[in-house]
Length: 133
Image (cartoon, rainbow, N blue to C red):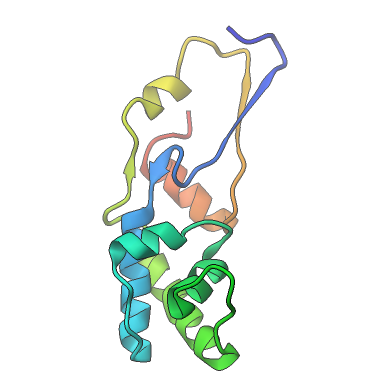
């Protein structure tokens, strides 16, 4: 049990929701549009973290430390955002036990999300996966 007035913060992607498959699919489609070679789903999943722009830089260069050439990055990133919005809920899933944990008997704690993404995507995801309890 938490103390009254306590807050519990959750990360959304990778903590409550496994969104890596949709992220990988969107990156794959963006790379096809740009004529780039995609490093594969497992590599893309390994590049996830620190936001989608960093993900695209990593996927283009194959390295977490390098920046992609600006024009190549810009085109790939624009395509990624287009496809990601279209693929947001195709293969993403809520991890087992998440909904039950969020609607647990302990209603005294404030539950909040701390995310590195756009608000409209977060609202869509929490309602789609019924984790807005």
